[in-house]
Length: 330
Ligand code: FAD
Ligand code: NAP
Image 1 (tube, rainbow, N blue to C red):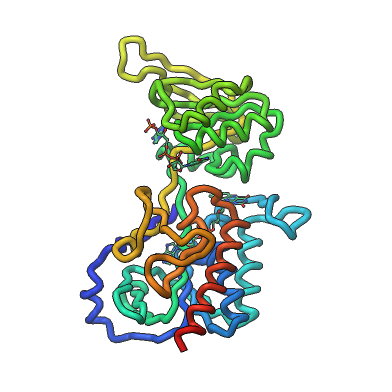
Image 2: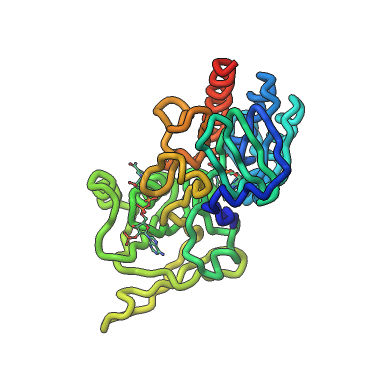
C-alpha cells in the first residue's frame, strides 16, 4: 500500500538543490482527480506538469472491475481505466512524470514543491490530488485475499456479494453506512465492533440497530480470515483478555474494512488547513484552499464520497479554478 514519504522536512534544507524548474500548473497525484485536472488544464493551455507519486494511476490500480464509472457499459478494470485517463491527458500535452512531492514551501507567491528530494518545481498554481489510503487491520490474510473477498469500499464492491453473507469491521459512521448499504444487497451483514459501543452518530446507530439483516458482534476482534479460494469465513475473538474470552468462527463471503482512511496530506499540512483527520479543507463548492493558487481535488479533500467519479469531478473543478486564478495573475 502506498505511504507518502516523510513529507514534513524543513524546506530550508532545499537550498542545496540547484535543479529548479518553473511551471504554470503543477499537478500532484495521478488518480482520477489528478488526470481529470490534467485533461482540463492541458486543454486550457496551462501546460500542466504532473508528478504521479509511487502509485501511478492511484487507488483504482489495486482493483479489478470498476462497474460504476459512467461511460463503460461493460465495466472496466481499474488499471485499464487509469491507462485510458493517462492517454487522454497526454493527448492534450500533459507532461506526466514519475516522482514524489517530498516537501513544499507555500509561503510565497511562487509555490515551491520539492520532487524526490532532488528537484524543485516553482509553480504559479498547484493542484493537490494525492488521494487517501484506507486503513487495514494489518493481518496477513488481508493481503492474501486482496481482491478475493477483502474490500475497503462497499459502494465499489458490494454488488459482487449480492445475496451473500458479509462482515464489516469498524464502529464509526463509515462502518454504519457501509453495513446499511450492504444490508440492501446482501443476505446477512455482520458488523464487527471491538468495543461495546458504536462511535457512529446516533442516527447512524439507529439505522444499523433497526436493520433486520445486520447483526452486531459486540466486543469482537478479528484474528484472521480463512478460505480455500477466497474468503469463506473469519475467526474472531470475543471479549479478548477477559475471563470469558471466546474464539468464534463466522462463515462469510466478503470482508469489508471500515476503520477509517488516512488522507495523503502530510506534505502540505504545514501550510494548508485540514480537518482533525487530515483532509484538506476547501471552500465549499470550490477546490480553493487557504493558500491562493493552491487547489485540492479528490479523496485528499473528501472524507465523505471517495469515489472515482466524484474525484474526477473535483479534478475538473480544480483545473477550472486554477485557470481562472492564473488568468487573473497576468
Ligand atoms: P487516488 O486514486 O488515491 O490517487 C492518488 C494519487 O496521488 C496516486 O497516484 C499517488 O501515487 C499520488 N500521490 C500521493 N502522495 C503523493 C506525493 N506526495 N507526491 C506525488 N504523488 C502522490 N471508486 C469507484 O468509484 N468505483 C470503484 O469501483 C472503486 N473501487 C475501488 C477499489 C479499491 C480496492 C479501492 C482502494 C478504491 C476504490 N474506489 C472505487 C475508490 C477510488 O479508487 C477513489 O475514490 C479514487 O481513486 C480517488 O481518486 P484520487 O484521484 O483522489 O486519488
Ligand atoms: P472513525 O470515526 O475514525 O471510526 C473508525 C472506527 O473503526 C471506530 O469505531 C474504531 O473503533 C474502529 N477501529 C479503528 N481501528 C480498529 C481496529 N484496528 N480494529 C477494529 N476496529 C477499529 O472513521 P470513519 O467511520 O471512517 O469516519 C471518519 C469521519 O468521517 C468521522 O468524522 C465520521 O463522522 C465521518 N463520516 C460521516 C458520515 C456521515 O455523516 N454520513 C459517513 C462516514 C464518515 P473505536 O470506536 O473503538 O475507536
